[in-house]
Amino acid sequence: MAVTIRLRRTGTTRRPAYRVVVADSRSPRDGRFIEIIGHYSPLTQPPTVKIDRAKVEAWIKKGAQPSNTVKKLLANAKAD
Image (tube, rainbow, N blue to C red; front, side, top):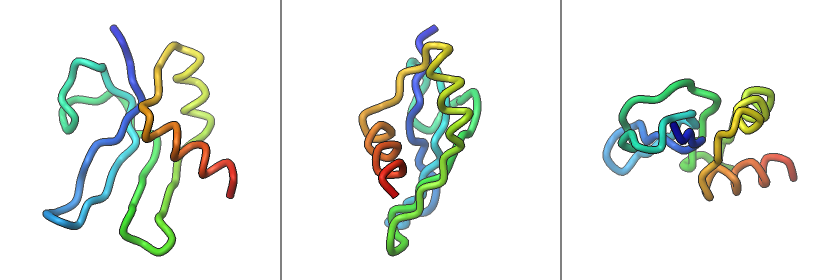
């Protein structure tokens, strides 16, 4: 099973909010997931990013691959 760390869209039309989740790569974007490890809200000023680093590192050690967007969020969160 290929596991990815990616965003899951929540919120309403034109008011997106995202959860950072660990999911099977074959499941749909808003479908089944294994664990919620953070939140991302692009509409706040500045955008809110809250990710549990310990859980991310544990999943990466287990072989999970972060999506390109999650990689950018992690890199920006480290810079702050």
